[in-house]
Image 1: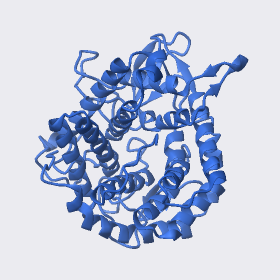
Image 2: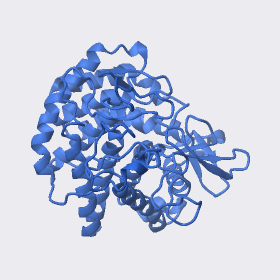
Image 3: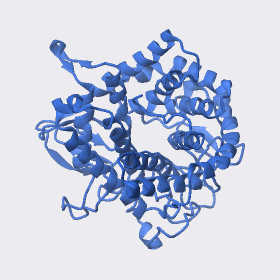
Image 4: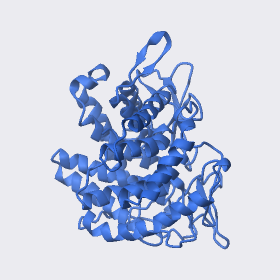
Length: 457
């Protein structure tokens, strides 16, 4: 990527207004045509959302998009849609014991509604606020209960694959524990043992940084600084680490770029959170300085890796080691072309990274590090500019997607390949649409000097 340091939030505002003129109709179209009995909309095929039964992790993004549309436009239709559907359909996600996705589903819905009420954007109703906060408390505790101990003094929230599996995705979902902890909640275990949600958040962040992120320190023959593995495998009997793995990437020794995006944004958010915690808050689980150093190291490694392994506009391949990637040579000065016939690009990874860069840049500016702050904010604005323009912005009103050229599961062959083409392209995914909306909301708020949203506020 070539981060454009001449870009700023105000310059992107006209494009965001154009974006919002398109997104509203798409959100309403999906709501009007989707039958919740079919499951959850996951990704588009030929421009229409369809489902894919693997895990129900995208419903919160569907209703979260409506809530963010209200956030950015004050159009009350979208508040009603997001609020009513959250109440009607999201309760199973609060108590879901089989997934690692609580932060995705429940902070996109209950969390956003709570934030808007705290900001005074919707009328204050204490009982309604209590309802949102109860959902968040329970969700955080249920997520924290999905726990595996390791032989290294820390544990992790295991993925839906089972207790052996540590997913990189969970770094972004981890914030549900932080929010629930801020609300005074804890997980109660056997014998009335009180288990700290902050403690489990910290342990997971440490374990993920140690095993899912690489730093060029010789862990294996492919240890490149900033490489991220989708999944780490542990022996559940003795807690020993066994090997890297992947579900959606090309190999365990390359970087599935959406996995990296979850890690980058997850650590950036946690750094903002930890900046508000005292030494006493953290002391039972280690020193604050040591924990912040671990998270900064992971965030910086992944941030630089993405810059070095994406096209000039910040859009990456779906996996940095996929077979056709080498044929492109150095790509950081090249414009991205999602219609190439060699390897798919993944706009959803770019959208998630965009927010990570903006938050990481703001974090470093708050610390007085002008160089890092400016660099990463420029990366965020560069990605946003690309997603606000064709070919990534879905300008066709008949296409239900918002951000085109997202990839879900390339190894399984789930992504739609248009007739006459060799690789998937031209389709959207629920998480890509939502995270593009979230990125544009952040930028629009900055341009208009509106409050800066934080998951833990």
